[in-house]
Amino acid sequence: MRMVRMLERSKETAINEIRTHDGKRLHPTTMPRRRALLVGTEIASFRSPWPVEDSLDELALLAKTADLEVVGRIFQRLPEPQPKFFIGPGKVKEVAALREQTQADLIVFDDELSPAQIRNLEEELQTQVIDRTALILDIFARHARTHEGRLQVELAQYQYLLPRLRRQWTHLERQTGTSGGTSAGGMVGLRGPGETQLEIDRRLIERRIAWLKEQLADVHRHRELYRQRRRQTGVPIIALVGYTNAGKSTLLNAMTGADVLAEDKLFATLDPTTRQVLLPGNTVALMTDTVGFIQKLPPQLIAAFRATLEEIEEADLLLHVVDVTHRNAQEHAQTVEQTLRELKVDHKPILTVLNKIDLLEGATAEGIDQIAAEMGLPGDIVAVSARRGWGLQTLGERIVATLAQRMVRVDALIPYQRNDLVALWRQRGVIEFEEFSSDGAHIVGRLPPALAPQFARFARA
Image (cartoon, rainbow, N blue to C red; front, side, top):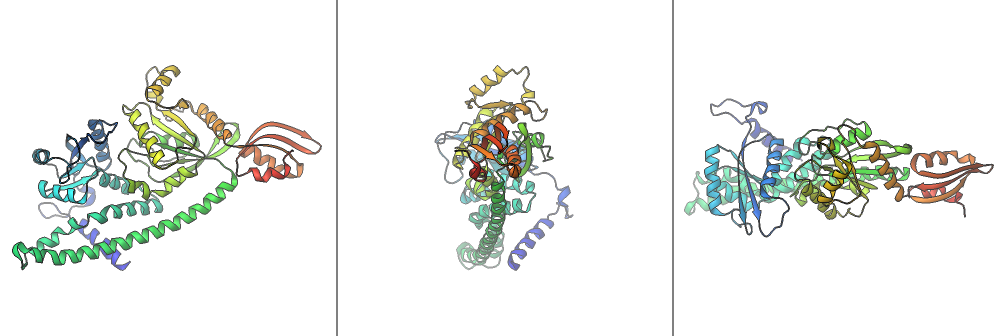
């Protein structure tokens, strides 16, 4: 741990030593925005529903969220990625010319690059190169608020960094090369201290990753205890899923009266947030807002954010929120559906919520149904405006009806001494028939599976 803290302090020192060209210290809050040049590709061997221009538009929004200034963009259509630079050598020269023209100091690729490709591109372009994964990790680091969220972000960052360590120590190689290397070109001198520092850094990061995993395992155990208690109450769980910036947080606020941050930015909220919601018929449920999905989301990021995924796995119902006004709404919906399949939760009941209908001029029920059909969405949809509160009553009724289908049908005669069970049924279940006699309350209806055993001894034959 002491060595890890030393490593972290050295990083802080490096940040604090950033200076302007005239030697003055530059405070982080006054640092100029970095100028980013975006590079995209369309790979023939990979059939993506996204046109490369639209994917670059999204990358530009990600860059804006990361407080970068986009000064240009360029793309190439290829039969398959090139091993050395990902793009072709001719296109690399075009990127170099455009970087010079725009004075960009950062190149952002829309695809995940290998460590060797990043190293080759930086040597060729003489500036920093990052990929989409690194950009998303930076945004996640900015938006993580809870202790668990920060742990998950740090774990994902170190797992991303570990295979890319070699290029971090080129400054040591330059120092060694100028201090008397003994082989032709200084290769032996270059290799020694650089490799030694590389191994030290790798061990530090591996230890940090192990520690982070232990911390997250503790968090997981605490969460599991909480979930066990929650299951025993029989309260249904509703998880909001959808593409980033579809309006999930706004819908959570509108349904529950919460005050979760809702901004017109990608990944405005990162940590899962759960609030109680009162549905029609006085049905109580828990609604969880999860991190938004996005195309080209790397597997290591999905694996790192286990807490969000566990909330989805625990849910009794998924509300798939779609921004119906977005020109890529169909691609957004397909990305979410594909991600749910990869997470193996697509078997759960899913209710599709078409959000932001207030932005559709003259929209009618028939017109919205036609839009949903053209997008290939299932027929089980509800149109709402979370911002204006339109359609929320209908959505609540559909949620109650869908949850009722998963409940267990029970016919019970409950004695008056157990009025607590009657109250529990009214709060957690659905009552279809109720009659009172001298023996107690005869109730027929539905209950969450977790609660049904409590009523088994009073079940009528």
